[in-house]
Image 1 (cartoon, rainbow, N blue to C red):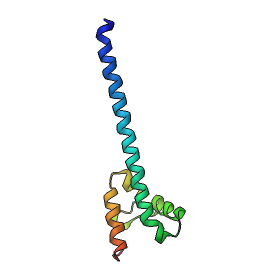
Image 2: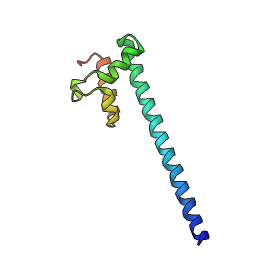
Image 3: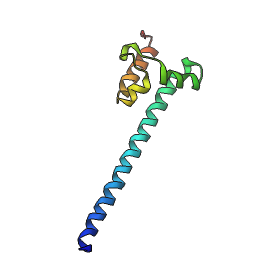
Image 4: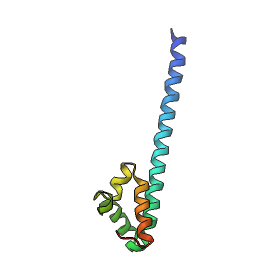
Length: 93
């Protein structure tokens, strides 16, 4: 009976490690996305702190009056980048 449980235990351990790896990769990607947004915002925000405040709190009318932080959490990072690119090219906010 113990011999039959060994492969199941190995499989469970592998799944846990794989899941943890996926969670870490998602976290790392999200952090990179946030840094990219902050890097785009900081020059016109005036400081990193102001850029972070904008990211967390400023409602973007063109994107449903949600701040960038909420949009990124919803998986809408590309929408925020398109918006910021539009603004950088002289478009209206």
